[in-house]
Amino acid sequence: MLLYLQEHVYVEGDCRIWAGPFNRGGTPRVMWNRVTYPARRLLLQLLGQELPEGAKTYATCGNPSCMSPEHVKAGKQRDVVRNTKRLGRFPKGTPRSRIGVISHSRLAKMPITERDRVAEMVAAGKTQKEIGEVYGITGSAVSSALKNWRRAGLIDW
Image 1 (cartoon, rainbow, N blue to C red):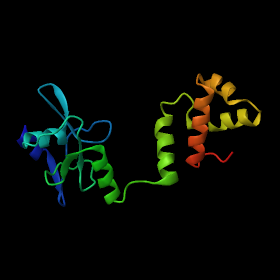
Image 2 (cartoon, one colour; image 1 turned 30 degrees about the vertical axis):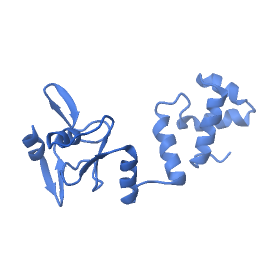
Image 3 (cartoon, one colour; image 1 turned 120 degrees about the vertical axis):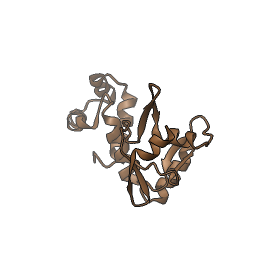
Image 4 (cartoon, rainbow, N blue to C red; image 1 turned 135 degrees about the vertical axis):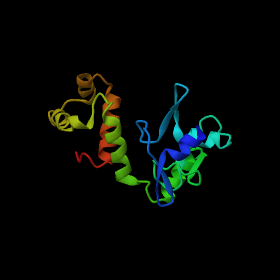
């Protein structure tokens, strides 16, 4: 399996780019013995590295498809964040808030796509509790959503 992981790539500069399937997060995955594994995690384990439970794997080069053993590291979430900051890819302030609001809105009962309808209800004098009843959430959840939308710069009212 180690040979498969090392050969199922194409070379692009210093990186060995995974040529197989990816998980929903866009990182390499592989099926072995009818079990799906994160490919980079399996690579490190097959190379003899002990990975503690919950360890995250990441590429120090910043390419989420990279399988180069020299670039693939394992660590805690803070190590992943530090690497992302080092690469200059860690958004701060309003852009970071906007990413959070939009990424969570797909699953939200009151998504950002309802912004105009919510604005109409606020303008009509509805309370946050009344708005929440429309979406099946509490008034405090409406308050939290509006606060996050404001912080992200998606509303100005």
